[in-house]
Image (tube, rainbow over all chains, first blue to last red; front, top):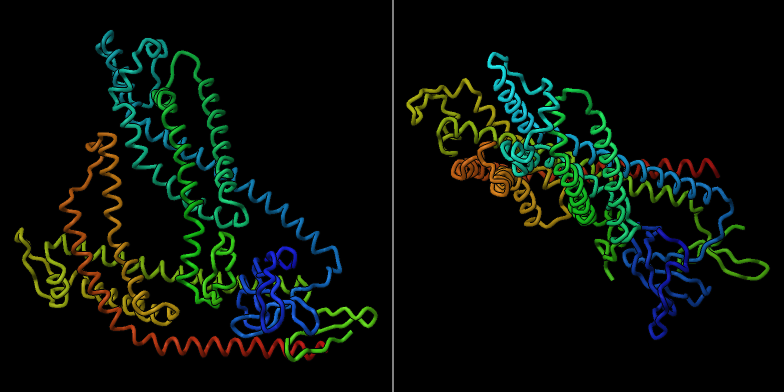
Length: 304
Length: 235
């Protein structure tokens, strides 16, 4: 909401006139009527003839709104504004990092779930290899470690294909974690879109890159840490399966997270406006007029 | 300096005795900020309450419709036969020849609960959504319910799409179209019954709206009295 007459006044149109006096512009910010609470956005600013004051008339109740103000007496309002801006920035950073970590967590979950078929296949092929030289050997389950020397000689592409390949990975992901990712990112995107009301659409979409970068960085660190932990003579099929599919699951899940976040960002404001229009009478919706004016739209109940 | 109220502008005017510059005495921005914050708070509170109520009523009605439709499918009955039969307390014979006593399942109570929920929804829509035109209000309410009972199509479409893309339909059973359609038709039939009950109960919403208005007015007058009392005490 702006109270600064310089910001609120549009370029004057000298040819127009009003019963109160000369029209000097229109109110471009949000300003509610002091009597009835109607939002005066878009109303004409008039220099009235009696006191030479800049005023705007409320079209609902006729009350004049003065546009000249005294300068602020104290500095505390500015201090509070700076503190709130700082707090807002910290909150934005924390939420962005949290969103990035959520995408990363869902990428890990996607990898875990999608690796199940592959780890069973690895265990089965390993069992067949063990039986080939020791027919009395007891079959191992998929969580028991396999010989790393055997693993180095295995045709990994054929093994991956045997377990269903990329399509099986994507099928499992689509039925589990991607659904959660979709809803989580859509809700966060909608919230972000409304929280960043003063920010342009392009900058809002650029803000999506921050959580994506966080998720990507966390994923790279996680994968590097996992690769370095594989040492010794044996390794569990679960870890091998994860290492084989992460190159599919991590980039896809992070990219999808970004796409869903952008969808949420694009849907957020129209959705918020729709909810406000459905739930509130125009009189109450005036208080949330910023949802409309931020996108250059007319608030509800506007009567010019 | 004490301001004087100009009758044509209805604003407190102050004229500087030295330079004769005219200004309007206004509230301090901090107090104005709080009054705006209160207005936003009121609007958000209404949205919150209405959203919660919508969620509860939609969720409960959809849940009941879904459960009743599943029971109707289990009994191999059409929605109308099922609804009528629920109150007859007779044994019925399904196509598989099984005799089932309806009374045991409490279906009559389930139908009455659903009807009560629909009646409450009808009253709620009439009492609190008066700012929308009648047709729009009901179209919105019925569309929301229809969307909720049709959610199975989203799940089915999503599963079928991914089964097609990934060629993995055998990993998880994708339900057949016919089964989905039959279940949906029963749910829509039950929804139609719900809408009839809602419409029948909606006239109760008109006095309910008056009561709400009177209550709000009383609350506003009470706040005004308090504010005037506090102002008088300060002066």
